Image (cartoon, rainbow, N blue to C red):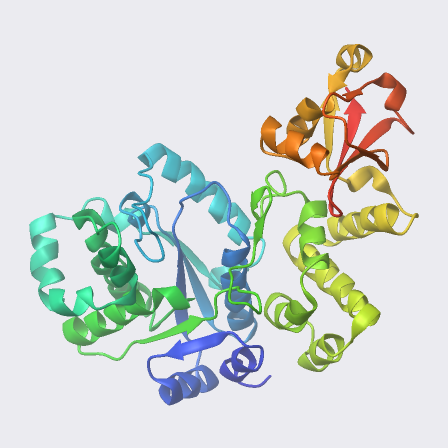
Length: 409
């Protein structure tokens, strides 16, 4: 196998590197211990994290040792990077619960058996730090003037301001790198390109405290051809937890990406050989839909497994091709009694998760964007009942791409 640095570069991952030639040489000649951090701010990883996990998987396949760092400590402070407001403060219990879910999800992508990878939580060393000792050992190496020029702080300083607690975040992340260097010989920190300033902080801290070389590398953020972040849907973020984003909805998201983003997504989010990625990405007009089907299947297979990917594929064929299995389409259960009495479509759209509110449902109906069993509905007083059951369910649709089956409990 060639140098993983070249693999990552060819697939479009790499954005910035602290020392490009030394890093490439290092990755080509020896087994390197590297880390990526994940702050436990939610109860599931999302598709932005998935890109980082793909990097980790490529690195591990090339023989390098990943450290997945769960930010149980840093989450209590909150990373100001890319945020216009201070992050909501979570309790230690909430962070711990989120951390456990992260650990289970990461283990689906990375092999932790026989020391092939390490998982740590920075709460283990951050929560019991002596603040004065920390300032004397770590804080002394940071220039406030220089920190204020960092991209991760600039946008906040120009907007609503930066709290002192968040100002500490760079020191804490840099200290993480130092701890991992000392404990595991970790010499490389990876992350999204928005983490560049924080990563440089850690590289320089190791050089100043230990007198040794350490390196950093950042990766492209998952954006579309217009530069906007991908992974946002009408229902919110595209989560890796199947209970938060169903495998069908996950599949459909990738099935419907713009034509111009297909090749990039295939390169970043699948393990398909680059020759095949380029072939699929070069397809035009109606043929590009075949590439989108491959993308949707491959990404869903990696995240949710082959069985769920096949189910999602068949469900999509059932809806859009008139053949296949509809059982994998997202569904909601209602009682037989409620159906006999009838449920207003406005209420049912919210229950089914097709709209976030009744007012949104009302607007969708008035604009002709809601259908029941394939028939458009424009009357906001429409009631859905038992008579609408077809083959044991009622199929609700919003727009061209959002579906939900209503089934009886």
